[in-house]
Image 1: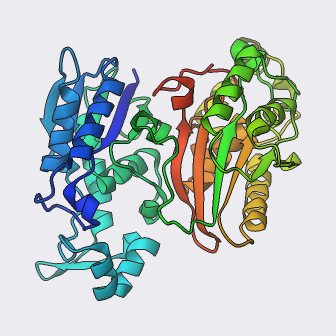
Image 2: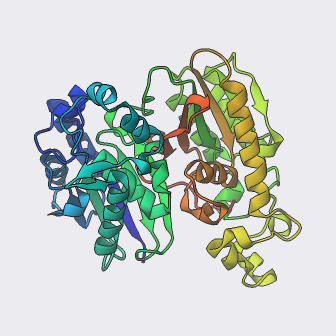
Length: 443
């Protein structure tokens, strides 16, 4: 049985407000805003059947957890865990980020550009904070997942450990530590298919809409390019569970409703470019979103068309299994090894989608100032792009969820010159839910 895990970062703390390094110092406490935001998280989650709450023992996380716990009619058990302590940065604790940048310029550069290589002297030895935190996250999973089948768990911890929990769960390398954003009082959702080592799905990353923040803000004011990667709205074949591939199936009424909800969600965002697969379902989704941005011309990219399922297209899973025994299960268990009959394989989709993505990033990040755009495509295309950005491979294809109308947010602070920051994945708040309840549907 699957285990759902919801991960929340603590509310704003005094050190957050002062832009100080917290680490494992326990002098930082929640601000009034931090407490109010924790209440909002509790109100958002209190209708879910949470079995247990795990929290860091540091006061800013523990108090956030207690506030959330108090929002439940029948409060779940609250369990502090040493394996949820924040990253250990003893050399920098209590310092402002500006002071750290001035006094330790080379180490601070490593912290941002190669965090897994950052070392600090601790007890006369070289200590690697991110590597140690990643191992700590793995220990937490190994301990907690045992006996948790079928449960829903809530974790309340910190920026750094939350990143490592997410990264270690899906197999993302420690070198990509700075690629994930974790806002105060955000919500992330992971779905474990079994115990530690079994496949894990990242359902959503860094939801903030419950706090009145539709999209997480860029880390820097001079962010060069922000792309909003969106999956098209629902089709009737999604609803029926039929494989679509390159069949040009249009949106159904619910799909148009989802697209309209996405349009309203993004209405006040200063969108100045639009990219789409040329197929009917993403193109119509993009056009509905761009109704509030009439000066944006749609840039249609054939390389963003959905994976070609060949002879599977138009069929239900039962029909595919009858005609191609075992191949559908292989697609679910080892997708990178499957050649679709008279269709594509995942590497072919990966190569064309990533080449197109990189080309468009390079093209649209050349100008001065900030640019915000939408990219509307398909389940397989979006999964491939996000897996690539997360440092994963085609074998990890199923570990990223994409719901109809879901929005992901990717920032390029320096264009292609620096790695992107993945601000959010599969935002569903505009569809009225924290959890992805869109049609399971085939690709």
